[in-house]
Image (cartoon, rainbow, N blue to C red; front, side):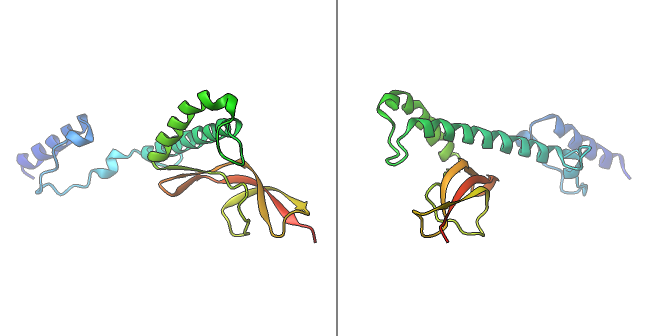
Amino acid sequence: MTMNYFNNIYSTLKQWAFPKEYRIHLSPWVNIDLSIAEQPILSNGQTDVQAIEKKHQLFLARLATGLWQIRQKMIDIKTEEPLDEMRRAYRPLASIWDLVKNQGVIIKDHTGDRYDTGMSLKVIAFETNEEVTQEQIIETIKPGVYYHEKPIQIAEVIVATPKP
């Protein structure tokens, strides 16, 4: 191998000192796949990028659940309008809710939805109820959270079943 070849490798490796968006791309005559080196393997077999992504998803799910819980205490469940005493405090929450929504996060409250056994939900309990004619979700314990339509938190619900 020539010295020029090693200089090209050295130049390529030096680019890792810079953020990815500022790096100069590999020379076309250097045929080395260095992408695997950019994702070190952790002791649990995951790459560093995967571990960070899971950590961010967990944070996002908890943040969304907290926002949903606060919102549930501030609105009239039937009208989805803020309670009179909460109107002023509700405005900043609504702004944050819209910000999260515009970033691709969907917080889904399943209360009132019809329940099908194939749904991607965690049913905490089934309750017999004379008022329902089909299985229906009567309470959401934890909302479903989706990021760009990818589930990051499965909803936890209570389902009412018709009296036999």
